[in-house]
Length: 284
Ligand code: AG3
Image (cartoon, rainbow, N blue to C red):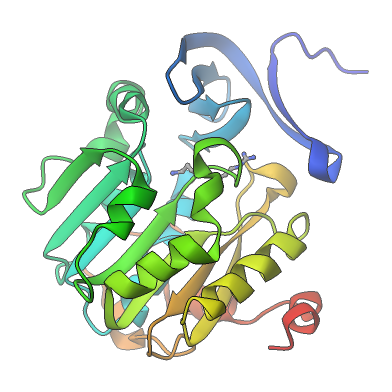
């Protein structure tokens, strides 16, 4: 058996598997009113953020998740001007959204301010766009925030949360999706991190039905690799108020004026093709 003394391991009970990193030291640990946050220095993956024993991100591979949580939805929308991010305290999603020139205002609603303060200290490159005049950072409950927004006032809601447990549990049900639907304009898109296709197929199915019952006309789940999360394979699910999700602004995506490391039009097209077992699960 390998030595595990210098390894951080996320043991994922639901799939009976784990993802681990060799670590040099734990740089920080803190219990906030919401959760326990840890930061590690790893030997090969840069810094690692862990919340309640679950891996949130590493320096080396967070680009996969953050690019897939943002660019497919933003290049599907005809021109999103007002965006809300629920969660996303490390600000990696915010940085990618702000790369889009058509975006006029992004409000990030993170429940735990400490996640952002620690990201500013340990993941400064993810926070490099936080001073953008289009960005507004709020620290409060995303469920209450969405319920209180005026109707048809937004173009996109991005839910960048932890797993559906603890403070994030209420972000995975029809009543939350109904507030998102209400706040979105016609053609608006909700995009949410939707866990592992191979470990959480049932949960993804439940999310998709709840999105439809909240009024969303089209729903698409896009799988992508994410080595640091359980099973190494993850997904986001988009739901639209009116628009088609199978088409996107391919030319704009191709001629994008900002750097990406994973996203490009081919990756986007590929992510729209569902593995057979997922097609069968949802008859897509
Ligand atoms: N995204 C966390 C996704 C859930 C990971 N789950 C796990 N490790 N069990 C939030 C951080 C990225 N902005």
